[in-house]
Image (tube, rainbow, N blue to C red; front, side, top):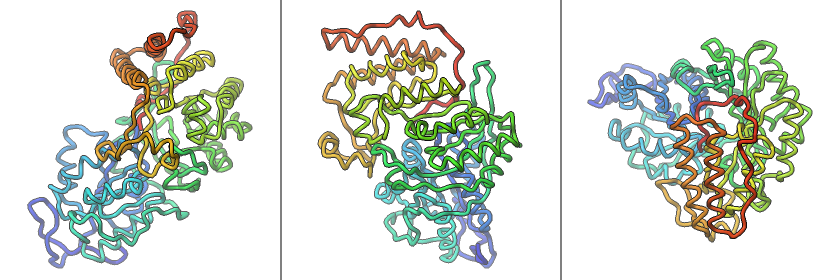
Length: 496
Protein backbone atom coordinates (compact mmCIF):
# COMPACT_ATOMS: atom_id res chain seq x y z
CA UNK A 1 0.00 0.00 0.00
CA UNK A 2 2.32 2.72 -1.22
CA UNK A 3 4.99 1.37 1.12
CA UNK A 4 2.63 0.61 4.00
CA UNK A 5 0.67 -2.43 5.13
CA UNK A 6 -1.30 -3.59 8.12
CA UNK A 7 0.64 -5.43 10.81
CA UNK A 8 -1.18 -8.49 12.03
CA UNK A 9 -0.85 -12.19 12.75
CA UNK A 10 -3.67 -13.15 15.11
CA UNK A 11 -7.33 -13.02 14.18
CA UNK A 12 -10.59 -12.72 16.03
CA UNK A 13 -13.16 -15.50 16.03
CA UNK A 14 -14.82 -13.77 13.07
CA UNK A 15 -11.61 -14.07 11.04
CA UNK A 16 -10.61 -10.40 11.22
CA UNK A 17 -7.11 -9.28 12.34
CA UNK A 18 -6.52 -8.37 15.98
CA UNK A 19 -3.84 -5.99 17.19
CA UNK A 20 -0.62 -5.57 15.27
CA UNK A 21 2.10 -8.15 15.94
CA UNK A 22 4.77 -6.99 13.55
CA UNK A 23 3.86 -9.10 10.49
CA UNK A 24 2.98 -7.08 7.40
CA UNK A 25 -0.05 -8.05 5.35
CA UNK A 26 -1.96 -6.26 2.61
CA UNK A 27 -5.25 -4.53 3.29
CA UNK A 28 -8.11 -7.01 2.80
CA UNK A 29 -10.79 -5.57 0.50
CA UNK A 30 -14.14 -7.14 -0.37
CA UNK A 31 -15.84 -5.63 -3.42
CA UNK A 32 -19.52 -6.56 -3.34
CA UNK A 33 -22.05 -6.39 -6.17
CA UNK A 34 -25.67 -7.36 -5.46
CA UNK A 35 -27.35 -6.88 -8.85
CA UNK A 36 -26.63 -5.38 -12.25
CA UNK A 37 -29.09 -6.72 -14.81
CA UNK A 38 -27.36 -10.04 -15.27
CA UNK A 39 -24.11 -8.42 -16.35
CA UNK A 40 -20.58 -9.16 -15.14
CA UNK A 41 -20.06 -5.81 -13.39
CA UNK A 42 -17.49 -3.39 -14.78
CA UNK A 43 -17.93 -1.52 -11.49
CA UNK A 44 -16.31 -4.42 -9.64
CA UNK A 45 -13.70 -5.43 -12.21
CA UNK A 46 -12.39 -1.88 -12.72
CA UNK A 47 -11.68 -1.02 -9.05
CA UNK A 48 -10.34 -4.56 -8.51
CA UNK A 49 -7.55 -3.76 -10.97
CA UNK A 50 -6.82 -0.38 -9.37
CA UNK A 51 -6.76 -1.81 -5.84
CA UNK A 52 -4.60 -4.81 -6.72
CA UNK A 53 -2.11 -2.47 -8.36
CA UNK A 54 -2.09 -0.56 -5.07
CA UNK A 55 -1.14 -3.75 -3.21
CA UNK A 56 -4.50 -4.71 -1.69
CA UNK A 57 -5.74 -8.27 -1.36
CA UNK A 58 -9.02 -8.01 -3.26
CA UNK A 59 -11.89 -10.49 -3.27
CA UNK A 60 -14.83 -9.89 -5.63
CA UNK A 61 -18.28 -11.06 -4.55
CA UNK A 62 -21.06 -10.92 -7.12
CA UNK A 63 -23.99 -11.99 -4.98
CA UNK A 64 -26.39 -11.95 -7.93
CA UNK A 65 -24.54 -14.91 -9.43
CA UNK A 66 -23.81 -17.60 -6.91
CA UNK A 67 -24.44 -21.19 -5.98
CA UNK A 68 -24.59 -22.97 -2.64
CA UNK A 69 -20.85 -23.64 -2.65
CA UNK A 70 -20.19 -19.88 -2.70
CA UNK A 71 -21.73 -19.31 0.74
CA UNK A 72 -18.66 -20.30 2.76
CA UNK A 73 -16.37 -18.14 0.61
CA UNK A 74 -18.76 -15.22 0.95
CA UNK A 75 -18.91 -15.46 4.73
CA UNK A 76 -15.16 -15.92 5.13
CA UNK A 77 -14.45 -12.95 2.86
CA UNK A 78 -16.82 -10.59 4.64
CA UNK A 79 -15.59 -11.66 8.07
CA UNK A 80 -11.92 -11.08 7.18
CA UNK A 81 -12.21 -7.81 5.26
CA UNK A 82 -10.76 -4.55 6.49
CA UNK A 83 -12.86 -2.75 3.87
CA UNK A 84 -16.22 -3.91 2.53
CA UNK A 85 -17.16 -1.79 -0.49
CA UNK A 86 -20.68 -2.16 -1.91
CA UNK A 87 -21.15 -1.27 -5.57
CA UNK A 88 -24.57 0.42 -5.95
CA UNK A 89 -25.10 1.44 -9.60
CA UNK A 90 -28.89 1.14 -9.54
CA UNK A 91 -31.96 1.21 -7.33
CA UNK A 92 -32.41 -2.55 -6.88
CA UNK A 93 -28.72 -3.03 -6.13
CA UNK A 94 -28.86 -0.38 -3.40
CA UNK A 95 -31.85 -1.96 -1.69
CA UNK A 96 -30.19 -5.37 -1.76
CA UNK A 97 -26.92 -3.97 -0.43
CA UNK A 98 -28.75 -2.20 2.39
CA UNK A 99 -30.35 -5.49 3.38
CA UNK A 100 -26.93 -7.12 3.57
CA UNK A 101 -25.37 -4.56 5.93
CA UNK A 102 -26.70 -6.04 9.23
CA UNK A 103 -25.16 -9.40 8.33
CA UNK A 104 -21.81 -7.81 7.47
CA UNK A 105 -21.79 -5.84 10.72
CA UNK A 106 -22.58 -8.99 12.68
CA UNK A 107 -19.79 -10.94 10.97
CA UNK A 108 -17.29 -8.11 11.09
CA UNK A 109 -18.24 -5.15 13.32
CA UNK A 110 -14.90 -3.38 12.76
CA UNK A 111 -14.94 -3.41 8.97
CA UNK A 112 -14.93 -0.06 7.20
CA UNK A 113 -18.07 0.13 5.05
CA UNK A 114 -18.02 1.99 1.77
CA UNK A 115 -20.83 2.49 -0.75
CA UNK A 116 -19.78 3.53 -4.23
CA UNK A 117 -21.54 4.03 -7.54
CA UNK A 118 -24.38 6.11 -8.93
CA UNK A 119 -26.83 5.56 -6.08
CA UNK A 120 -24.35 6.06 -3.23
CA UNK A 121 -24.32 9.89 -2.99
CA UNK A 122 -28.03 10.05 -3.86
CA UNK A 123 -28.84 7.97 -0.77
CA UNK A 124 -25.98 9.24 1.40
CA UNK A 125 -27.91 10.07 4.57
CA UNK A 126 -29.66 6.69 4.59
CA UNK A 127 -26.47 4.75 3.88
CA UNK A 128 -24.57 6.57 6.62
CA UNK A 129 -27.30 5.74 9.12
CA UNK A 130 -26.84 2.10 8.14
CA UNK A 131 -23.18 2.40 9.13
CA UNK A 132 -21.54 3.49 5.90
CA UNK A 133 -18.31 5.39 6.53
CA UNK A 134 -17.36 6.41 2.99
CA UNK A 135 -19.63 7.42 0.13
CA UNK A 136 -18.20 7.68 -3.39
CA UNK A 137 -20.06 8.67 -6.54
CA UNK A 138 -19.10 9.52 -10.09
CA UNK A 139 -15.55 8.52 -11.00
CA UNK A 140 -14.97 6.42 -7.90
CA UNK A 141 -11.72 4.51 -8.58
CA UNK A 142 -9.40 7.29 -7.41
CA UNK A 143 -11.57 7.76 -4.33
CA UNK A 144 -11.20 4.08 -3.47
CA UNK A 145 -7.42 4.35 -3.79
CA UNK A 146 -7.43 7.37 -1.47
CA UNK A 147 -9.58 5.43 0.99
CA UNK A 148 -7.35 2.34 1.14
CA UNK A 149 -4.27 4.50 1.59
CA UNK A 150 -5.99 6.26 4.45
CA UNK A 151 -7.06 2.99 6.05
CA UNK A 152 -3.54 1.61 5.72
CA UNK A 153 -2.07 4.71 7.35
CA UNK A 154 -4.58 4.45 10.21
CA UNK A 155 -4.00 0.77 10.85
CA UNK A 156 -7.08 -0.35 8.97
CA UNK A 157 -9.69 1.37 11.10
CA UNK A 158 -11.39 4.71 11.34
CA UNK A 159 -14.56 5.16 13.38
CA UNK A 160 -16.55 2.12 14.48
CA UNK A 161 -19.20 0.80 12.13
CA UNK A 162 -21.84 2.20 14.42
CA UNK A 163 -20.60 5.71 13.71
CA UNK A 164 -21.80 6.13 10.17
CA UNK A 165 -21.50 9.91 10.05
CA UNK A 166 -17.72 10.20 10.26
CA UNK A 167 -16.00 12.75 8.05
CA UNK A 168 -14.32 11.58 4.86
CA UNK A 169 -11.62 13.48 2.99
CA UNK A 170 -12.55 11.90 -0.35
CA UNK A 171 -15.10 13.84 -2.42
CA UNK A 172 -18.59 12.32 -2.31
CA UNK A 173 -18.88 12.97 -6.03
CA UNK A 174 -15.82 13.07 -8.25
CA UNK A 175 -15.93 14.09 -11.89
CA UNK A 176 -12.18 13.86 -12.34
CA UNK A 177 -10.82 12.67 -15.67
CA UNK A 178 -9.22 9.37 -14.77
CA UNK A 179 -6.63 7.36 -16.66
CA UNK A 180 -8.32 3.98 -16.45
CA UNK A 181 -6.70 0.62 -15.79
CA UNK A 182 -7.73 -2.51 -17.70
CA UNK A 183 -10.40 -4.17 -15.50
CA UNK A 184 -9.42 -7.33 -13.61
CA UNK A 185 -12.22 -9.89 -14.01
CA UNK A 186 -10.30 -12.86 -12.65
CA UNK A 187 -12.18 -12.87 -9.34
CA UNK A 188 -15.67 -12.82 -10.88
CA UNK A 189 -17.85 -15.77 -11.92
CA UNK A 190 -17.44 -17.08 -15.46
CA UNK A 191 -19.35 -15.25 -18.20
CA UNK A 192 -21.58 -18.25 -18.85
CA UNK A 193 -23.16 -17.73 -15.42
CA UNK A 194 -24.53 -14.35 -16.49
CA UNK A 195 -27.33 -13.36 -18.87
CA UNK A 196 -27.10 -14.72 -22.42
CA UNK A 197 -28.08 -13.29 -25.76
CA UNK A 198 -31.07 -15.16 -27.20
CA UNK A 199 -30.80 -15.25 -30.97
CA UNK A 200 -33.76 -15.70 -33.38
CA UNK A 201 -32.30 -19.06 -34.40
CA UNK A 202 -32.63 -20.32 -30.84
CA UNK A 203 -28.88 -20.17 -30.23
CA UNK A 204 -27.53 -18.53 -27.09
CA UNK A 205 -24.51 -16.22 -27.16
CA UNK A 206 -22.20 -15.67 -24.19
CA UNK A 207 -22.29 -12.00 -23.26
CA UNK A 208 -19.50 -9.80 -21.97
CA UNK A 209 -19.97 -6.31 -20.57
CA UNK A 210 -17.91 -3.13 -20.59
CA UNK A 211 -18.24 0.66 -20.46
CA UNK A 212 -16.75 3.16 -22.87
CA UNK A 213 -18.16 6.25 -21.13
CA UNK A 214 -19.85 7.22 -17.87
CA UNK A 215 -22.33 9.95 -17.11
CA UNK A 216 -24.42 11.87 -19.63
CA UNK A 217 -24.41 15.34 -21.14
CA UNK A 218 -28.21 15.63 -20.77
CA UNK A 219 -30.39 16.56 -17.78
CA UNK A 220 -33.55 14.44 -18.03
CA UNK A 221 -35.51 15.09 -14.84
CA UNK A 222 -36.32 11.48 -13.96
CA UNK A 223 -32.82 10.13 -14.65
CA UNK A 224 -30.67 8.98 -11.68
CA UNK A 225 -27.46 9.95 -13.50
CA UNK A 226 -28.22 13.67 -13.42
CA UNK A 227 -27.86 14.33 -9.64
CA UNK A 228 -24.37 12.82 -9.78
CA UNK A 229 -22.93 13.86 -13.15
CA UNK A 230 -24.92 17.07 -13.68
CA UNK A 231 -24.67 17.02 -17.47
CA UNK A 232 -21.09 15.74 -17.65
CA UNK A 233 -19.74 12.52 -19.09
CA UNK A 234 -16.33 10.89 -18.89
CA UNK A 235 -14.54 8.67 -21.39
CA UNK A 236 -12.85 5.35 -20.68
CA UNK A 237 -9.75 5.33 -22.87
CA UNK A 238 -10.20 3.31 -26.07
CA UNK A 239 -7.16 1.07 -25.54
CA UNK A 240 -8.48 0.14 -22.08
CA UNK A 241 -11.93 -0.74 -23.45
CA UNK A 242 -10.46 -2.83 -26.27
CA UNK A 243 -8.14 -4.71 -23.93
CA UNK A 244 -11.03 -5.36 -21.56
CA UNK A 245 -13.04 -6.82 -24.46
CA UNK A 246 -10.09 -8.93 -25.63
CA UNK A 247 -9.93 -10.51 -22.20
CA UNK A 248 -13.63 -11.31 -22.25
CA UNK A 249 -13.47 -12.75 -25.75
CA UNK A 250 -10.64 -15.00 -24.56
CA UNK A 251 -13.01 -16.15 -21.78
CA UNK A 252 -15.74 -17.07 -24.24
CA UNK A 253 -17.69 -13.87 -24.98
CA UNK A 254 -19.14 -13.67 -28.47
CA UNK A 255 -21.30 -10.62 -27.76
CA UNK A 256 -20.55 -7.43 -25.80
CA UNK A 257 -23.02 -5.12 -24.07
CA UNK A 258 -21.80 -1.54 -23.78
CA UNK A 259 -23.32 -0.19 -20.56
CA UNK A 260 -22.82 3.50 -21.35
CA UNK A 261 -25.88 5.57 -20.39
CA UNK A 262 -25.65 6.98 -23.92
CA UNK A 263 -23.15 5.56 -26.40
CA UNK A 264 -23.39 8.69 -28.55
CA UNK A 265 -22.49 11.18 -25.83
CA UNK A 266 -19.12 11.03 -27.55
CA UNK A 267 -20.00 9.82 -31.07
CA UNK A 268 -16.46 10.06 -32.48
CA UNK A 269 -15.07 8.02 -29.57
CA UNK A 270 -17.90 5.49 -29.96
CA UNK A 271 -17.63 4.99 -33.72
CA UNK A 272 -13.84 4.68 -33.74
CA UNK A 273 -14.11 2.16 -30.92
CA UNK A 274 -16.59 -0.16 -32.64
CA UNK A 275 -14.73 0.12 -35.95
CA UNK A 276 -11.51 -0.97 -34.24
CA UNK A 277 -13.41 -3.72 -32.43
CA UNK A 278 -14.96 -5.02 -35.64
CA UNK A 279 -11.62 -4.99 -37.45
CA UNK A 280 -10.10 -7.18 -34.73
CA UNK A 281 -13.14 -9.39 -34.05
CA UNK A 282 -15.33 -9.37 -37.19
CA UNK A 283 -17.69 -12.06 -35.83
CA UNK A 284 -18.26 -10.35 -32.47
CA UNK A 285 -21.64 -8.64 -32.00
CA UNK A 286 -22.61 -5.94 -29.52
CA UNK A 287 -25.45 -3.75 -28.27
CA UNK A 288 -25.54 -0.14 -27.07
CA UNK A 289 -27.88 2.43 -25.52
CA UNK A 290 -28.59 5.73 -27.32
CA UNK A 291 -31.11 8.55 -26.81
CA UNK A 292 -33.79 9.27 -29.43
CA UNK A 293 -32.38 12.77 -29.73
CA UNK A 294 -28.90 11.43 -30.52
CA UNK A 295 -30.21 8.83 -32.95
CA UNK A 296 -31.61 11.67 -35.05
CA UNK A 297 -28.72 14.11 -34.65
CA UNK A 298 -26.12 11.43 -35.34
CA UNK A 299 -28.06 9.45 -37.92
CA UNK A 300 -25.06 9.47 -40.25
CA UNK A 301 -23.40 7.02 -37.86
CA UNK A 302 -26.22 4.44 -37.88
CA UNK A 303 -24.78 2.51 -40.87
CA UNK A 304 -21.46 2.25 -39.01
CA UNK A 305 -23.26 0.57 -36.10
CA UNK A 306 -24.98 -1.84 -38.47
CA UNK A 307 -21.79 -2.67 -40.34
CA UNK A 308 -19.72 -3.31 -37.21
CA UNK A 309 -22.03 -5.90 -35.66
CA UNK A 310 -24.57 -3.97 -33.57
CA UNK A 311 -27.45 -6.37 -32.88
CA UNK A 312 -29.74 -3.74 -31.37
CA UNK A 313 -29.85 -0.29 -29.82
CA UNK A 314 -31.63 0.22 -26.51
CA UNK A 315 -33.46 3.53 -26.59
CA UNK A 316 -35.06 5.13 -23.53
CA UNK A 317 -38.18 6.46 -25.22
CA UNK A 318 -39.99 6.59 -21.84
CA UNK A 319 -43.29 7.91 -23.22
CA UNK A 320 -45.07 9.25 -26.29
CA UNK A 321 -47.32 11.52 -24.18
CA UNK A 322 -46.27 15.15 -24.81
CA UNK A 323 -46.98 16.15 -21.22
CA UNK A 324 -44.86 13.36 -19.73
CA UNK A 325 -42.02 14.03 -22.17
CA UNK A 326 -42.07 17.71 -21.17
CA UNK A 327 -42.07 16.88 -17.45
CA UNK A 328 -39.22 14.43 -17.95
CA UNK A 329 -37.35 16.99 -20.11
CA UNK A 330 -36.48 14.18 -22.51
CA UNK A 331 -35.57 16.33 -25.50
CA UNK A 332 -37.65 14.39 -28.02
CA UNK A 333 -41.25 14.14 -29.17
CA UNK A 334 -43.56 11.33 -30.19
CA UNK A 335 -42.82 12.17 -33.82
CA UNK A 336 -39.08 11.99 -33.14
CA UNK A 337 -39.57 8.43 -31.86
CA UNK A 338 -41.58 7.53 -34.95
CA UNK A 339 -38.90 9.06 -37.17
CA UNK A 340 -36.12 7.18 -35.35
CA UNK A 341 -38.02 3.91 -35.79
CA UNK A 342 -38.34 4.68 -39.50
CA UNK A 343 -34.61 5.41 -39.75
CA UNK A 344 -33.84 2.07 -38.12
CA UNK A 345 -35.98 0.20 -40.63
CA UNK A 346 -34.28 1.96 -43.52
CA UNK A 347 -30.78 1.33 -42.21
CA UNK A 348 -31.48 -2.24 -41.09
CA UNK A 349 -30.89 -1.78 -37.36
CA UNK A 350 -33.04 -3.13 -34.53
CA UNK A 351 -34.44 -0.79 -31.87
CA UNK A 352 -35.05 -1.97 -28.31
CA UNK A 353 -37.32 0.77 -26.90
CA UNK A 354 -37.80 1.13 -23.14
CA UNK A 355 -40.54 3.04 -21.34
CA UNK A 356 -41.70 4.43 -18.02
CA UNK A 357 -45.25 3.40 -18.75
CA UNK A 358 -46.92 4.36 -15.47
CA UNK A 359 -46.49 7.87 -14.11
CA UNK A 360 -48.77 10.21 -12.14
CA UNK A 361 -49.79 11.68 -15.52
CA UNK A 362 -50.51 8.43 -17.35
CA UNK A 363 -54.12 7.85 -18.35
CA UNK A 364 -55.66 4.66 -19.63
CA UNK A 365 -56.19 6.48 -22.92
CA UNK A 366 -52.52 7.48 -23.19
CA UNK A 367 -51.46 3.95 -22.26
CA UNK A 368 -53.63 2.54 -25.04
CA UNK A 369 -52.21 5.07 -27.46
CA UNK A 370 -48.75 3.70 -26.69
CA UNK A 371 -49.87 0.12 -27.39
CA UNK A 372 -51.48 1.17 -30.67
CA UNK A 373 -48.34 3.07 -31.67
CA UNK A 374 -46.12 0.05 -31.02
CA UNK A 375 -48.47 -2.07 -33.10
CA UNK A 376 -48.49 0.45 -35.96
CA UNK A 377 -44.69 0.69 -35.91
CA UNK A 378 -44.34 -3.11 -35.84
CA UNK A 379 -42.34 -2.96 -32.61
CA UNK A 380 -44.18 -5.57 -30.54
CA UNK A 381 -41.31 -8.03 -30.86
CA UNK A 382 -38.82 -5.32 -29.94
CA UNK A 383 -40.19 -4.47 -26.50
CA UNK A 384 -39.31 -6.51 -23.41
CA UNK A 385 -42.67 -7.36 -21.75
CA UNK A 386 -41.67 -5.91 -18.38
CA UNK A 387 -41.61 -2.49 -20.05
CA UNK A 388 -45.44 -2.50 -20.18
CA UNK A 389 -45.61 -2.29 -16.38
CA UNK A 390 -42.65 -0.07 -15.37
CA UNK A 391 -43.71 2.44 -12.71
CA UNK A 392 -41.94 5.77 -12.21
CA UNK A 393 -39.48 5.81 -9.30
CA UNK A 394 -38.97 9.22 -7.71
CA UNK A 395 -35.70 8.89 -5.86
CA UNK A 396 -33.81 11.15 -3.49
CA UNK A 397 -32.24 14.12 -5.31
CA UNK A 398 -34.32 13.54 -8.46
CA UNK A 399 -34.75 16.64 -10.63
CA UNK A 400 -38.47 15.83 -10.63
CA UNK A 401 -38.54 17.22 -7.08
CA UNK A 402 -37.89 20.66 -8.56
CA UNK A 403 -41.46 20.68 -9.90
CA UNK A 404 -44.21 21.93 -7.54
CA UNK A 405 -46.73 19.54 -9.10
CA UNK A 406 -44.49 16.62 -8.16
CA UNK A 407 -43.89 17.79 -4.60
CA UNK A 408 -47.65 18.05 -4.14
CA UNK A 409 -48.33 14.40 -5.02
CA UNK A 410 -45.54 12.54 -3.23
CA UNK A 411 -45.52 11.17 0.31
CA UNK A 412 -42.69 11.09 2.84
CA UNK A 413 -39.50 9.42 1.66
CA UNK A 414 -39.72 5.66 2.14
CA UNK A 415 -36.32 4.36 3.31
CA UNK A 416 -37.34 0.74 2.83
CA UNK A 417 -38.10 1.30 -0.86
CA UNK A 418 -35.72 4.27 -1.32
CA UNK A 419 -38.37 6.29 -3.16
CA UNK A 420 -40.93 9.02 -2.64
CA UNK A 421 -44.22 7.10 -2.91
CA UNK A 422 -47.05 8.36 -5.08
CA UNK A 423 -50.53 7.20 -5.98
CA UNK A 424 -52.41 7.97 -9.15
CA UNK A 425 -55.47 10.20 -8.85
CA UNK A 426 -57.35 7.54 -10.81
CA UNK A 427 -57.18 4.28 -8.79
CA UNK A 428 -58.00 2.32 -11.93
CA UNK A 429 -54.65 3.28 -13.44
CA UNK A 430 -52.78 1.86 -10.43
CA UNK A 431 -54.92 -1.30 -10.58
CA UNK A 432 -54.13 -1.67 -14.26
CA UNK A 433 -50.41 -1.47 -13.53
CA UNK A 434 -50.71 -4.21 -10.88
CA UNK A 435 -52.85 -6.41 -13.13
CA UNK A 436 -50.43 -6.01 -16.01
CA UNK A 437 -47.41 -6.90 -13.90
CA UNK A 438 -49.14 -10.06 -12.70
CA UNK A 439 -50.17 -11.01 -16.25
CA UNK A 440 -46.68 -10.37 -17.62
CA UNK A 441 -45.05 -12.48 -14.93
CA UNK A 442 -47.56 -15.27 -15.55
CA UNK A 443 -46.84 -15.14 -19.28
CA UNK A 444 -43.10 -15.33 -18.64
CA UNK A 445 -43.54 -18.28 -16.29
CA UNK A 446 -45.44 -20.06 -19.07
CA UNK A 447 -42.70 -19.31 -21.59
CA UNK A 448 -44.97 -17.22 -23.80
CA UNK A 449 -43.59 -15.16 -26.68
CA UNK A 450 -43.45 -11.38 -26.60
CA UNK A 451 -46.40 -11.26 -28.99
CA UNK A 452 -48.48 -13.54 -26.73
CA UNK A 453 -47.70 -11.40 -23.68
CA UNK A 454 -48.54 -8.28 -25.66
CA UNK A 455 -51.97 -9.81 -26.34
CA UNK A 456 -52.47 -10.20 -22.58
CA UNK A 457 -51.49 -6.55 -22.08
CA UNK A 458 -53.68 -5.39 -24.95
CA UNK A 459 -56.74 -7.18 -23.58
CA UNK A 460 -56.33 -5.94 -20.01
CA UNK A 461 -55.78 -2.34 -21.11
CA UNK A 462 -58.84 -2.34 -23.37
CA UNK A 463 -60.96 -3.92 -20.66
CA UNK A 464 -59.87 -1.19 -18.23
CA UNK A 465 -60.70 1.49 -20.77
CA UNK A 466 -64.13 0.13 -21.61
CA UNK A 467 -64.87 -0.21 -17.91
CA UNK A 468 -64.28 3.48 -17.32
CA UNK A 469 -65.53 5.12 -20.54
CA UNK A 470 -68.54 4.93 -22.77
CA UNK A 471 -66.33 5.15 -25.85
CA UNK A 472 -64.12 2.30 -27.01
CA UNK A 473 -60.79 2.21 -28.78
CA UNK A 474 -60.93 0.46 -32.12
CA UNK A 475 -59.51 -2.97 -31.34
CA UNK A 476 -57.10 -4.14 -33.99
CA UNK A 477 -57.07 -7.79 -34.93
CA UNK A 478 -53.70 -8.95 -33.65
CA UNK A 479 -54.18 -12.24 -35.41
CA UNK A 480 -53.87 -10.44 -38.75
CA UNK A 481 -50.34 -9.32 -37.92
CA UNK A 482 -47.95 -11.80 -39.48
CA UNK A 483 -45.66 -13.55 -37.05
CA UNK A 484 -41.96 -13.11 -37.66
CA UNK A 485 -38.76 -14.24 -36.02
CA UNK A 486 -38.09 -12.63 -32.69
CA UNK A 487 -35.28 -10.11 -32.44
CA UNK A 488 -32.17 -10.86 -30.38
CA UNK A 489 -32.60 -10.07 -26.69
CA UNK A 490 -30.82 -10.55 -23.39
CA UNK A 491 -32.29 -13.25 -21.17
CA UNK A 492 -32.33 -10.96 -18.12
CA UNK A 493 -35.45 -8.75 -17.93
CA UNK A 494 -34.91 -4.99 -17.68
CA UNK A 495 -35.39 -3.75 -14.14
CA UNK A 496 -34.29 -0.60 -12.33
